[in-house]
Amino acid sequence: MSDQDDYQLRFQVADPGYSDEDNRLYDQAMAAITKALADGQSWNKAKECVNMVADAGFRAVILDDFVKITLATRHFQQEEGLKKIAKATGMPMELLLQAKQEMIHEVKEASVAAYHLTQGKGDGSSQSH
Image (cartoon, rainbow, N blue to C red; front, side, top):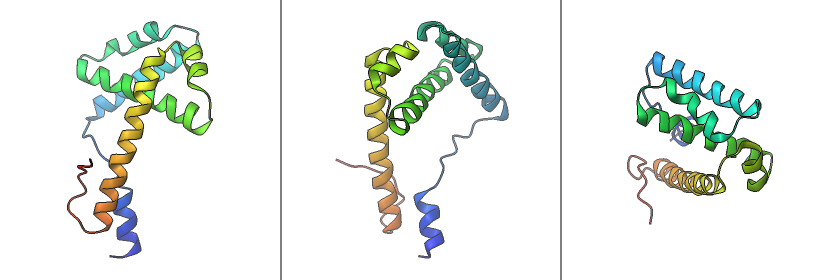
């Protein structure tokens, strides 16, 4: 396996297969939530920004992504404490803690899958303990 193949296997980007319209709605909703929070609205009020999305499952994905992106940038990159993020955004501490644990689990699963792909062991689907 070449170094290029190895790199491609380790850094594959999952394509969720959203339509152009879904991507437009996603971007609009993310921007609206960001603006609402920047304008000082509560998290519960900011969540209403996704009401433009008809599909409840897709709304949940957008909100989940927003919380995880917030954690990735503010907590993991900028080393801001969860309490400070909760206070600044109005997000419940329980939501932030749950999202953090999910993110750590997702990274673990992705790491195991990438390892298996680079070792030629299966399709990369991770079934860790």
